[in-house]
Image 1: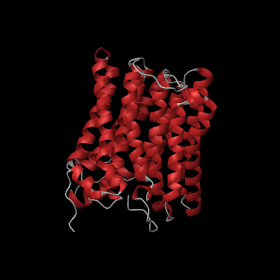
Image 2: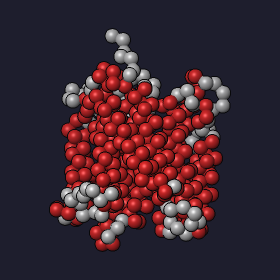
Image 3: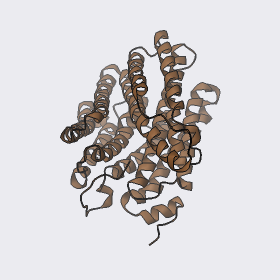
Image 4: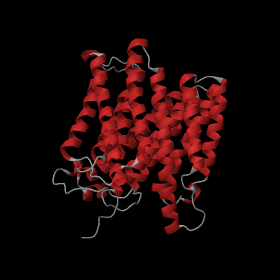
Amino acid sequence: MAGPRSRNFAGWPLFANSFRPFFLLGAIQAGLSILVWLPMFYGELSVTSAFAPRDWHVHEMLYGFLPAVITGFLFTAIPNWTGRLPIQGTSLGALLMVWLAGRAAVALSAEIGWAVALALDAAFLALVVAAATREIIAGGNWRNLPVVVLVLMLLAGNVAFHLEAHYEGAADVGIRVGIGVVVLLISLIGGRIIPSFTRNWLVKFNAGRLPVPFGRFDGVVIGLSALALIGWIVAPLNLITGVVMALVGLLHLVRFARWAGDRTTRERLLLILHVGYAFVPSGFLLNALAGFGVLPPSAGIHAWMTGAAGIMTLAVMTRASLGHTGQALMASPATQGIYAAIIVAALARVAAVVFPAHSDVLLHIAACGWIVAFLGFAAAFGPLLAGNPRRALAIMGMPAPAR
């Protein structure tokens, strides 16, 4: 992820690049949402949302936090894809305000009405899709248009979520649509960046077996994943769906094994990407077991969302924040602590489903790990994203650059 093309920017550094505000505020929202969710789960707290408590929690993770991180990544990557200038300054600030308005609208939807909340919330992803499509078409970078198509599908899932929650009382299909899109985004983007970053590091520091780059096999796996996820969206507990999910999970394991992740243990910034992606095949296999009636479906869902999405977002946010601000690509003690916390959160959240007798303790461990990871990212990387790298490096325990 080379630094993006840019014009001179004289304003607050937080609005110099898309990743800065969206990674920072997305992480804060992720941490605070779970801090609120745990007492909501136990009936000790409520919000003024028209959504049922579970739907509010899922929505703010799936259609609140993740779109912010996706936007930060997308509008940082697009200038590298197209050679065009990035969105920054006033335009970036306006886009951020639309995202914040959506968060407020969902939280207050019982007061302002579900239709108003839908319009305000959906406006953000609609603007992201429009701006990204414009940039890709103007730059002639058709290769990356599938990423924008997936974001468009995420927008459709968000609209369906609001409609289903209002008319049906629960947004089950809207939830599965969003999760399916997120899994495909991780499969597509992760399948490009993980072997690429791994190859670059191994060539320099650990000569030997190299990862297989993105190719036809990867395209076939992603295509079959899309078909399996469509079946899962329509009939998640069907035996045939279970068989297909199991087969696709095995294909993802083969894909994962081709990336030489076992050779990256010395480089934590790389290793965490492989750890995060390992939850993609795990999610498919756990959902297959749900289709066979062996496990509840939430085991596979949390493998994908807490595991794959949670770990991969932090892996990308930490690496991109360092790389795009000119810092050394090294995992500081604080960064490694963030990685440890999110791995604990992912494992505990899946275990809470698999071992229901211990679910209360495991849920608290998972929530604490998630909160520490994301608010820890905000605390450690916030000064760097806001334009104070020396303070950030001091917090993270990294050496300051020589004068």
